Length: 171
Image 1 (tube, rainbow, N blue to C red):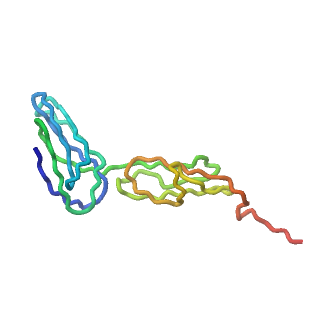
Image 2 (cartoon, rainbow, N blue to C red; image 1 turned 90 degrees about the vertical axis):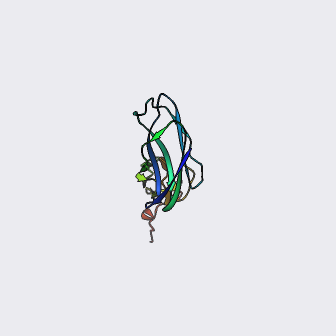
Image 3 (tube, helix red, strand yellow; image 1 turned 60 degrees about the vertical axis):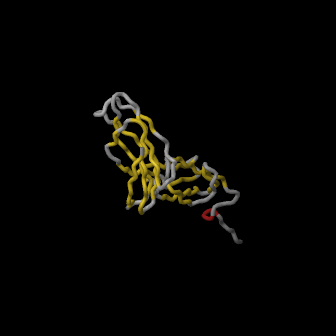
């Protein structure tokens, strides 16, 4: 059995959809959502034990662009659905240096899903940025936040003197 809903998304982003459901007489039910005819979210089975006992099902990380979308709710078995609550997903990006004596890194924090942040590695005198722990050598770099993530900046000792320590003696 299925029901289609038309959504008008005002704010694009990544959402966690919370759905209170109940099943009766100790029977099981299942539910899965399809957006714009693309079936990419797992079916969730549940047994709440009674029609008056609601438990939340969460469909995580649903990426929605601004505009109209069609959400299809598919259900199997005996299940009551109370409502849909669309919560903007929140993710933590941790940014650090592998050694604060060689350099620092910024750009971390807690962000709404789909937001962007700029990661920046700043070397200490006598060092240069080498790479991030995911292999990227781009610095600074802008990422789209769609999951919790940890980034570590690595620095290397330079083979030359930093600009502020070069002197020339003329006699």
